[in-house]
Length: 446
Ligand SMILES: CC(=O)Nc1cnc2ccccc2c1
Image (cartoon, rainbow, N blue to C red; front, side, top):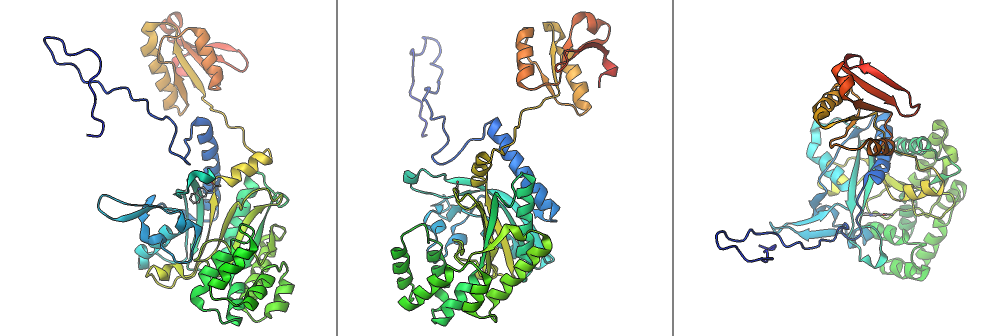
């Protein structure tokens, strides 16, 4: 086997063969490149974040779902030239199946919706929090995994779906102390792109590809953007016109350009009017350059951004009415968003909004001498059965050590089990904040 142990140390004694010991091969204690461990302090922050993700999702009436982190590679094979495809963490398993660590959650959600088919009543409002993966050459030193919060609405064709999703993200931002002066949403619709491309009779099957190219504006030089658009069957005239439309920042200007009859304009007008009703208009701005980097979006797209402009997009989403049918499902309308666990933490750090999260244990229980260890276990059990948390000292430690640990775990009370008191059926309860010390009868302990 791979870990063939080389015999080490003294040879076997005359009577019995040598005991096989694994050679102590120093393993790398760091996690694989691009991945993170979550030691207690980091895990408390992650749990705090996910707690707010969950609370908001449930406050909006969404149900939690989950899927395997491993999916068939086929779920992600889209031909639009997306970055997510180039960085797919895929491999062939021992059954010769092409599989991938999921780079996003939406395709899994679409797969489950189709699997559930007629047995679920629409609209579906599902949310998930899951780890997503990408395989990047470590040249860029970026992470290869992150956790994403997704909320999706399946079966609602109107922009009321997108308006509700944006409201849920704003509710989340407010819960963690961010306001409209810290963050905002850039909103557009891919129908803007569609209407321009139609004017230049660019074939429909080029739509996804053009979107992915446009999404790279600001990330690669404009000359490369123009070159890529030419290779997507666009004329130079069409390219210049498209780039001019994408620079629009007001719906009025967009109306001048596209006219008032198109769906792009009516969707956006409806969305901004709903925003008024929700009371979150100040969080939104129209920005025609927003297309998002996923090929399957078909309508409204939006992304959360930090107004200081230092960080990458905080979250992003939109309408994807064709995804389910491309998977062979019914033509169900859908919209959703993804919210990563990385940028938001950077933003909170910047704004000094990271929460102070300390370990909090109510009681620390310890026996004052060896033969009372069993008594200490009994006291711990009494408190735990009352629903209290107890850190039970498991070895015979000096009192100095116990006080130090009590401080480190932020214990509210120190319960000492001493011989004299125990014989009277009592324990010593010390409230650590005040130093107050009482002898309490066991059955009065609370
Ligand atoms: C800022 C960050 O860590 N982004 C990130 C990290 N890991 C990913 C993994 C899969 C897909 C997207 C990902 C995005």
